[in-house]
Image (cartoon, rainbow, N blue to C red):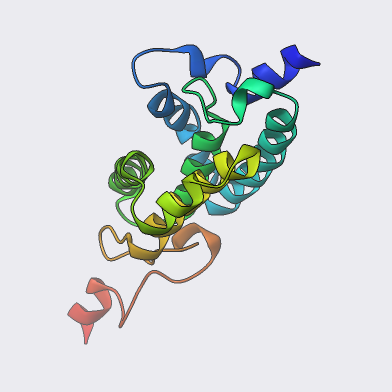
Length: 166
């Protein structure tokens, strides 16, 4: 069982890559952005639950060692829920970079979560960083949460073509 828990916690061994295993863990889930914000949200939920399960079974994972990257994968997916509409690639890049910066710097509430012991603390840190990304992140005037492909209009005041016709 410990082997499976290690596999889950390291996202299939990705956490063993060097340098910067957390960045590799975040990058591994980026293709899910193609599925849209709801796919990212569902993926994040699965990784959070799987991560909590794995971390509860691993004695050496409570202090968030570098090889544990399931939390980075989950957090990156939450940040990707902000992606949609025009400028898709730029938004994915922004979500990736912003999440990594916040996850490494751990400002404010992210730092507070970092001090929570055990598996909950490990998973909460990467839940706080993407929350800041989704609340603050706007790229190319797109809505910041569940916009575009989730069925929420990304047009405010009409499109440029409709303004030309007016």
